[in-house]
Length: 152
Image 1 (cartoon, helix red, strand yellow):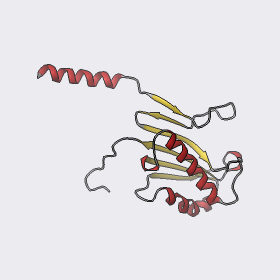
Image 2 (cartoon, rainbow, N blue to C red):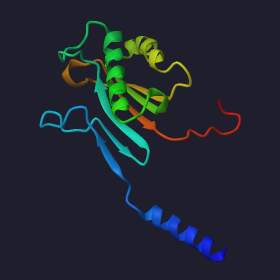
Image 3 (spheres, rainbow, N blue to C red):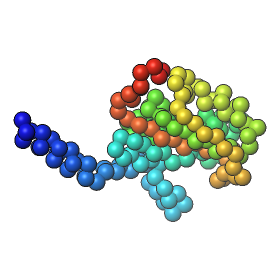
Image 4 (spheres, helix red, strand yellow):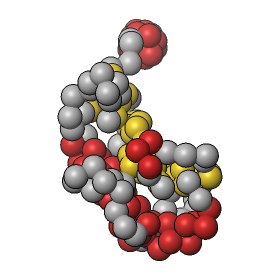
């Protein structure tokens, strides 16, 4: 029994010292014009780069709501490619070029996060790439989501 406990302690220490496994998730490969990964998966946590809401032609949609919906759908594509869903998202950061769009953002946001939405930050920025009005980045965690007693 003593040897079994010692073995368990040694295995735990060995596992803790192993380097984290990092997996790169890309829907399109990085390029000189786009030197980034869509997401990085490490130890069950997925870190998603910011996504803009441009349409398939690379243009900003006429309505802010369409742009916001496109950005969230684009993040959904990355989540799916990594084997995650919106239910796995624990943190969202949204960058808005104008806070006057905040209520329209919320209208679209609840389409994707109907129940128990993740933690979120929203900030106004001076500008976004290619004339965008919204950029969304996320963190998602795969695995058992343990809730403390009394927390919904």
